[in-house]
Length: 239
Image (cartoon, rainbow, N blue to C red):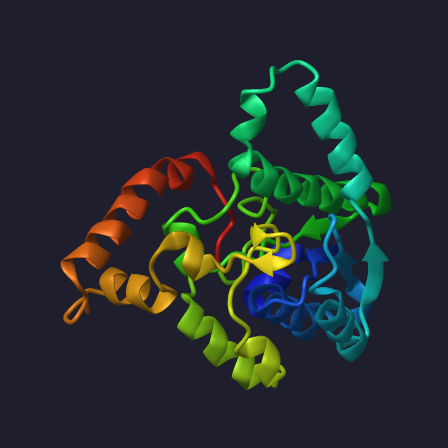
């Protein structure tokens, strides 16, 4: 928390609150470092509401300032403006667009709030396990003014969460990007989408891959190679 105080200085901090483990841990760390009066939690639904209950609980339990920005209309307007320039065959290749665009809109909203209020710093909520394999969006959740947990893998984030007294249901919630679905209403969880688990990723990263199959090791290495450009592109202020 001393690092957060040093980075934020006398400013306020703005952070997305979506009820997942990472944003909840960051919000708690911000309150511990700055006090609840200087933390602004922003809920940003974009056509889904699955996470709203946990997000509301986090904001209420911390007593921080609450903003809600519904991005669905903005997303649909941007989508319509872009798609009118493209033929119908391109419309079938939209998976990355559908997941990355809401993430970028959310970061734009955070910086918009920061700019309007003034004297605010935007907190990044990405953990190491996701960042290193590129399960993140450049200029979306891979942006921000400072990143308190981006050197912590998921196991370490869970350990910090327990120390902070965060609810067990949030700690054990299966990671989901909030935007990917197998079919309407059926979530496509992170590990299903990646084809490997975060535990397996951490084992390989920390040279403890004994017991991992050759297939799994190959998948993880391909993810690492594919995402390396993201790590070179973004220069986050990381703890």
